[in-house]
Image (cartoon, rainbow, N blue to C red; front, side, top):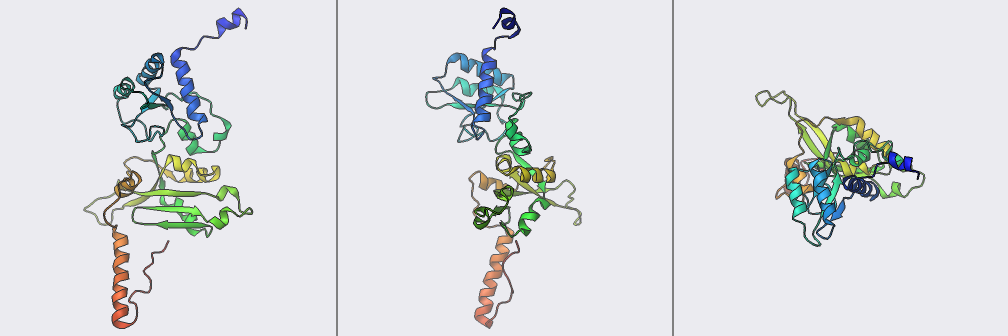
Length: 284
């Protein structure tokens, strides 16, 4: 390198080197993992991380955010100074992970593997793995009607997945060999008036960005066409609680109704030799 070239190539600062390393780890880890640091990490690196957090270009994920800091669940719910506090409180072996924020990924050219994959691209740009996207309910209809998929739903959510037979069938298109286990429901109450029985309650579909990112490109693009704004939408609290490991003590209203019908049929068959209800299986 000539002297002129050296003058035209500014030396990177420690902050820029660290940000580049965090971006590289995030994009090349295969699962959008953060860069782990602990007390054994050089002090200059920890100080640089604090600078980048204060600038809004890095996010700290510790066990205060999520049990596994190697997963960034959502944009931090803690203030920047609280995140810096996690850096200052580091101990040997118990560390934190650094992630690039949307600001920290601004201007970064993504690898070609993200082309045509909107939800994987969103994660690469700084979305959290457990952030939710919301959709028109019609997004589920093709899976419900396609015999290649197993489809089911309950009071709070749904699941769908290609059957084993189809998955191992080499004649079936690879683009359609998808599944999505953690599908939730949400309700749009923006036009609901409790005093007007005709006012609408619109059911929406909720799914995690990380799950959506694992769909094939074709299915990611299809889901994208059904996405709706998330203004005022919240997932069903029982479904979301289950995803976070809080299991409900009872059954939902539809499940209870089916259970009551089954018990009535049992009594009716014993008393009169025939069932009262022709079917107690909800249509899927």
